[in-house]
Every structure is written in C-alpha cells, then in structure tokens.
Image 1 (spheres, rainbow, N blue to C red):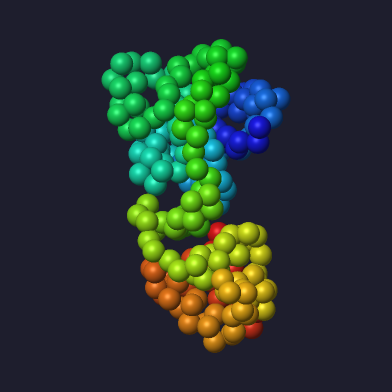
Image 2 (spheres, rainbow, N blue to C red):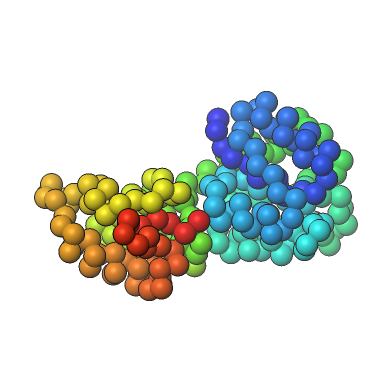
Length: 221
C-alpha cells in the first residue's frame, strides 16, 4: 500500500495525529494548511486521495473541492466540523466521495479511506499545470479534455515526466524516443516534433515544456 493522501487542514494537532495514523497504515502523507499550499501541492505531486476541511485560512474547502473535481485530480473526503444538513448536501453535490464530521474516530476514518480508494480505483495521473498524462491508458489531457498526440510526442512527454525536476539534454531525449521500427530519431525530427507537441498542449510560449538554453528541456513544475 503506497497511496498518497493529502490532508488540507490548519489544525496542527489534527495534522500530527493523522500523520501518525496514516503513516502507520503505510500511506504516504502530505499536509497543506492553506488553500494556496494545497493547490501548489496538487499541481506538483501525484495524490491518490484528499482529506479536506471546509474552513481554511485563505478560502473554503467547498471551492477547492469544486476545482479538484473539475480536473478529476483525486477522490475527496470532507473532514470538517460543519455538520448541518445543507453543508453535507453541498459537499456531496460538489462531488465529494465521503463526508466525515469532526470529532472523528480514527479506525472508522481509515476504513472510509480504504473504501473510497477501492471504489474509485483511480487511474494514475501525472500532471504539470493544466496538462495531465495517464501512463496506464496512454491518454493526454489539456484542461481536463483529451487531446490526440502521436506516439513520438507521447514518448517525449513520458521522458520528461519520468524525472519531472530534471533538465533533459536533447541527446537524452533522443535516446529515449527511438521510433517504432527501432530507428534513431534525429535532431531535426526532435525539433519539429517538440514544436507540434507544444502546439497541441497550447504551449507555444514554452510555459509547460521549458527550453533551457544550451542544455535541453524540462517540465515547468
């Protein structure tokens, strides 16, 4: 079990308690105390489930849940003291997968987490800004909508996503994108393919795939 769970909560004691509980259950634990911190983490890390408080210092969890669900990032369990019926109904209407009211029982929460993860069986998704790639299906998305890419374009994306914080030289990328017949792809083909890929990603300015002058390319995480 190695799923990553992001807790969005500003109460330090709850953060510490859930970090201990969930790491004991062999989950990878991440925490964000504000909406801004959460958005930054969701843009840069692969998350399998979100535990979300409604009341945050710089916004509310309902708005954040809406954005998470719009981009199909991860299942969401609300973890909140807001127990009025209208709040519970709103949470589910926004697409929440469960709604747990504080104070909660630890073992029950773990059981609910397991149930949501089993139920959703979410496809692994790699993200960079508004671009997402599903390695298990070979699909690429821009702003949540699927886009068509060639096998060569897909190989370039997967090479960059294989180590998203690394600057890849052109030679390293070329080594990773032999064509389907086993023929080596030349430098000119890489230039043309990269240009077409950026056009499909809506990235003509190089805001997703960044050109590092004199070296190569990296993802803009």
